Length: 583
Ligand code: SF4
Image (tube, rainbow, N blue to C red; front, side):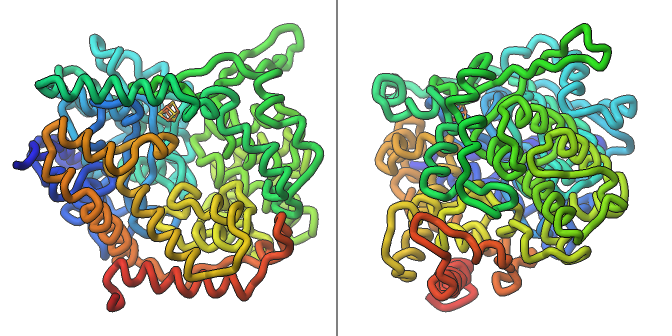
């Protein structure tokens, strides 16, 4: 018995029209990551550059979206302007549920709009509006203008927007989702900007059927109880991921000042505890999530006139606190939030932008570049320069800022200082844990810390068994692919075991997908790798800059021989997955 096929909406901006169609099914591509990869195989142009108008930007959800808690994420697949390769980015917010309530499993956008536009889609809507007057408007302010689109569906409405960085095609531009979530990494914002799409409004304006029978409500109740009455998700709701700052600093794994240190007593000023005490205003959640890990801080700043205050709400997590905090040598919570706020407005990936600015500060300190290039002083610990730096990155003010927006390693190659560019495929995530993570991020499918648990492997394992490490990375990635096909929040991966996902697929009418879950996950894993290779990925060309070899972790100095062994074996493993080598 098979489940229902996927329903997709393909909107062609050049033609100004959209078409619904049925495409694939859970028993063929699972959903989420798998559906996105299948769609890219159909709509993508492997031989054309990322900004070719016909390249698709794809948003896909999974068969369990809207039916179970924490099935709250959407996969965005696109050709990365940063690497040139097939890429995925994941975000929460209201988007997944809005797509489900609109009756779509995926939205595929191709073509280029005649002018800067807002695309409005729903079960009963399909409109393209000219919004040339929003050119250059920041990614937060633009949200207010979008309220007039889609009256009547506000409870199930999601808005995606780009800031000036996306419009200016900065390869590190992100897509802002419902103000507090993002498709952050690898340049999805520029992919949308190249299509002249300032925003997409998704209206969940239809009703969706609930699975029949008693099994579905019983399983929902069981999962809900696991998530809310056990301590499995407490960490995420309480201090949230910022809890990691003190932990990683304690084991010498928190990058400071462009990774010149991995620990610093200044962590007390920017820890999760300090943010909770000084900055936390409220917590919120993605649609369909009872956990609520989104921590929102209140930034209070005096106007230049000095007799009134400006209040801003800025969401914070571990990663932005590392990239705009410790990496920039900032030790005051309000300074970090101020830099993040400007990054939000420009619509930049907060991790890439923060890490790129850290490189620029060290480059200036070492005399590799001068203020003639940077146009302003950038000093570790000085928030004002970094705030302005975010503006320059988003606006591409001059050649230096244009190159830096393409990545710190590209700036290092152009100006010198590539040795201290903290880039592992893209600007590093905040884990200076050791050899396995450095290889896993540098060569990983998304160059993201969430591709596999290399960071936790480093923290737990004392041996230098490269074969065992690579076996772990490949297996762990496969488990995560299973989750990103649904599309589950990866924070819930401890709850959604393969057996539980199989049960959920069965009670929602997808028994064939349930029966072949592991095999299908492996197939999606291979598809994604093949797409990455077909669009130009060459693992041998990936550089791990010298700075990473100078790191000292709780295990001591990085061992280049072990790192080289992990790298060689992982390269072989991913080539095998993409069927470039015999198994
Ligand atoms: S745990 Fe956090 S990121 Fe995950 S679905 Fe819930 S609110 Fe969203």
